[in-house]
Length: 222
Image (cartoon, rainbow, N blue to C red; front, side):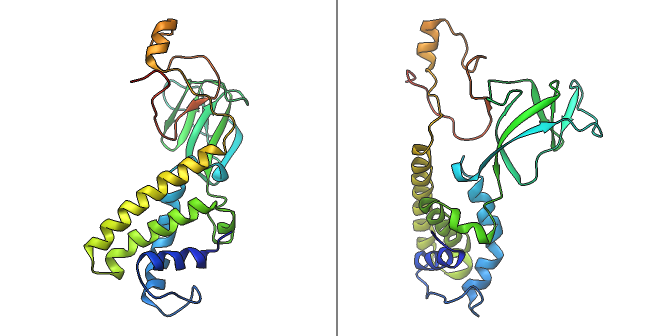
């Protein structure tokens, strides 16, 4: 388990700078990290469908809102929402397309929606200990990269940090994905054609309408 201080210390290692003792040290890095921290954390949470940051909730239509043209109901996003992963009209997150994200609200013909999303509940400083190892190590590299221009004068180091950061993000995503037990690998376009399934992304199946994460080839794609 890490702490905010440990993340900052790790960032200083990447920047090849002297370490700090507390988050209140009178050091240039402390001020730079303090200014960059909130943005770095938010961007990191939005960089993947992290299991530790996921949340699901049922949404009731807000009668005080005017639905967008063509829709019967409008819905508020829940507190702490950062990014949508899936939307459905069923708690099991069956495939669903009858909705739109417009004007900062969800709109649908269904009177109730189910939302799976990335939440900021674990983004607070006192929740850093809940971050998986590979994730907080990625955050440390991102913090170092984002403050490198202010704290160093070397373009070479910034380039090295960019490469390390991208590798750390990929590793964190891969490790996080191994902890999932409910992802279904969809057949690729070639297999769908053989089965007469038609165009990619047709309806049917389960899992809700996935709107976050990475797009990958299905089995059978070349």
